[in-house]
Image (cartoon, rainbow, N blue to C red):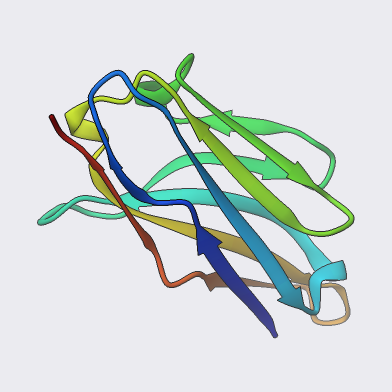
Length: 121
């Protein structure tokens, strides 16, 4: 089992910056990927950025050049530095961890509770 706790959401003006953090606890040694997703009202939950335990990163086209994902592989924490924020970035942001159960060749997804990010003047 893995538990995720997010922090750092809030209200920010367009063009501003915000940093989200997520800390994993429990069976963290088997986590292979951590990611941030977001879900705006009435829309599906979409990937924002991800980072693997080898440091490989992936970004949605809409945030490339504005958001940076980073993490501590030992502590299994992941951060999302968001800059040049736009109103369309407004959403609930969720942290996700992917756990690999090697003995069973199973991948399990865990989600945080979500944190609200609102970009508005």
